Image (cartoon, rainbow, N blue to C red; front, side, top):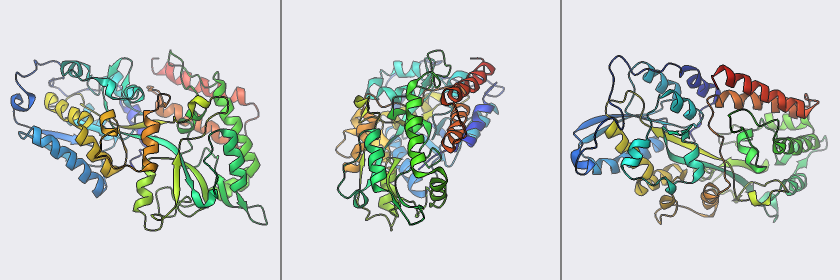
Length: 447
């Protein structure tokens, strides 16, 4: 899929202060009168620079196909796309006065900084000007594309996280709906050898395993990241203690050393030797894109598997069916040479049903509008439908925007690694220590 490591994404957060658009002031969205007549007729000819992170041949072709639909509406606009661009490159270009007209990012971690600093332009004036009803987007998608009342990006495609399970290893068992059921089934399905080493794991609870991050697992218990003032809520929210207590009990049942030995023996997450493909793990937390990876892998394409929402806290059954979501965001950087043209491209890619369906069918990510999700042209089977339902669930959540999003996640992940190893004697004190790290960083950032 299209993930940016936190360490790389962090470069952007560090580089966003004092963004400039060069010596000459470039036109901005909302600063010019809207052309009379239809935009397709009134906008003059122009060439747009579009930067995105897609890099594989299939991804690039899908993006080109979506742009082709835009060219039919605006034949006078040429779109010059540059692939494989990361967030730090976008930010440096903005600072150097060489921003592209449109930029897309695979991570939502920098949205808060981009909106706050003005690195990406506020889209609210043109959204209102064109009468776009943002209710066509789930509330969660609206939340991760804005910060502090400023919408500087739009959602392009989304990721949703659920449970994958190997039907052969499940032996007729239904996917678990609660954490208690997950624990019981994990123990039932785990296979060990005579020395107690793990041969097959029912479920790997380690926070160091692939997609098992705090952000992805927090929604299983309805955990809260921040208070209304932006300070950390991790130490005060009992849901985090509930999640970590459940997780540590399951780690201890495996034996930390045994679990680590098994985890480190497993194949690469993005390779052909993924443990789920090889039948070494019965249940995994993963995103919707795994469906496409299974279908495209010669060794895994015949895998008999199913998908379901993630199990949730026993005392919060109303959360079942929801999960974590985030996704690709796209906007118009400060300093764009053709901001009005750029907005038309952003609008097309994020609100045009055919465009979103084209991208979803090719990339197997979740389209973000209700019309696209319900389109008869959208390719979907039962396993993919699970993630459409998770994305649309009213209790599905995301990591709230923060100017220090990367730092905050890394601080919590570091603590959780120590916790599962047994190096933390007082969980309450440890979580409050994470609060202090996050809050001290917020003060340094002017929060």
